[in-house]
Image 1 (cartoon, rainbow, N blue to C red):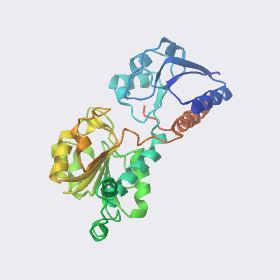
Image 2: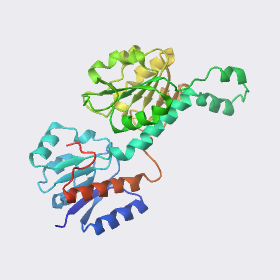
Image 3: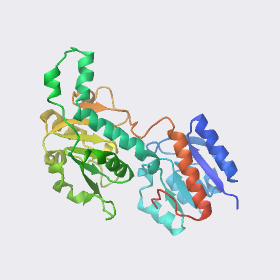
Image 4: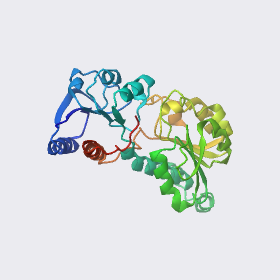
Length: 325
């Protein structure tokens, strides 16, 4: 039976050709929405053609998706799914047997590599030498050589432990780090020490590095607040590759200025774009990247392969990868 795939994900030219060629080989009809969307942070617009589809790929409007009884699978093109993390949406999808997946597997490698890169940058004091090259250009051999550290044996706490956290755990294995995962409800099969979000205070005093992968949700907004930062081991490093809304940036700024947090690398901020006058830009021990941790040159091609691989599983009646509903 031929399937109709509705799509509104904005793809770069090479990936777009791969998408259409792959679906043509599978005998699918494609409805390309006139209103494209690239990010879960930007709401997709309603599109009446969604009602014709068996499968929605990209960022369909959640309210409209609930009104489309023909839909059998909603394939989100992002790892985040804030706008779909609603009881009414989940209930509606489950009631008619509609599967919902995200693309978290696509972003696990680049996000984990980004986190590791920033951890090594702090440990080896690389930001200090970027500043030195641009400024005084001093050859502080002895001072620098005996102040840098290694990652060996450090304790790393990962908030919102999931696909990204698991990949980061693998990358940290050669450094013999103690990795502690934090999630709302640990499953028990993670293979590392795990604690519930409600018990995070028990592990924060142990942390040399805290990597925040938390999604935006009602229970995670401002999760990293003044109390959170006060509970950290003094001089810990903090990294955000989750969502900007999960961090109280005023509290983080205070913690940076007091030395409670020695440094921060932030890839997710609130708001985005962060205004040029925001004090985090000027904070010397805080470094910002514009929400690119999950990106790489072949990101769109990887997204298409993830979707078409799942599409083959869907046609074959196999369980889908990265299922969330």
